[in-house]
Length: 250
Image 1 (cartoon, rainbow, N blue to C red):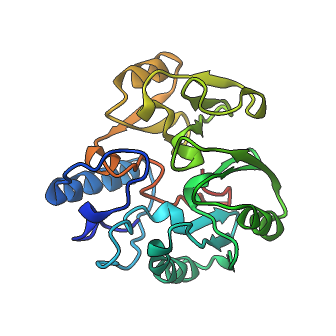
Image 2: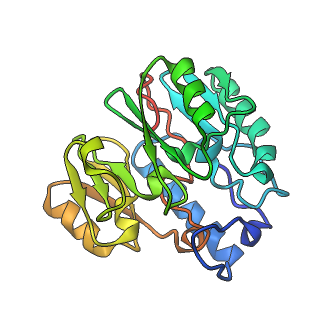
Image 3: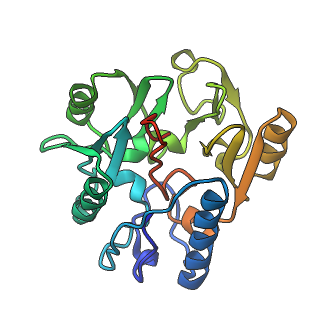
């Protein structure tokens, strides 16, 4: 995790209109997010603050963890590349092996979705073809590229449930590329993070999806992240999960 900094309100927005961000409320919401993960058995490691980087709280974009390998990204937005060095230091401090996406490749962690040994990568405004090629070479995994255009990142459009099925908005991703696609009506409802067993981290902005998932036998863990959603953030963006045993981050 990385705590939100004093310049959070200046974070990049691409597909939404800029709104005022309450820094104090964002800090409280981030603390609640961390507490929800801790209550589900996760140990919290903090990356060094980056007060000059407005988007640094969205730590997911700087690291992708596959087994014991941390791939340090090269963010598609040049202004975010100053966030990377401290994220790399944190990963190395946890004993992870390190690989890096290098120029001319670009890759944001928000474009990377790992499910059952397959790595889906969004090819859009932040991640390019060379970044995808370097990820394939670094991991040796099955990599499936997905063209995206109307959302910031792949995980802005689709995420996975613990049973291997996927949540998405109608028409957001090609149906044939994802097995077991479940469409939901709420945009924040297609952003979830499996956090162990049947538990699923989900935004309080998606109450109907929360009810649906509970009715299907999952255990939603609801967090308030409204200030981060104003900056196109979601529950996936605010952490990099490193499961014991090297399963990789969702």
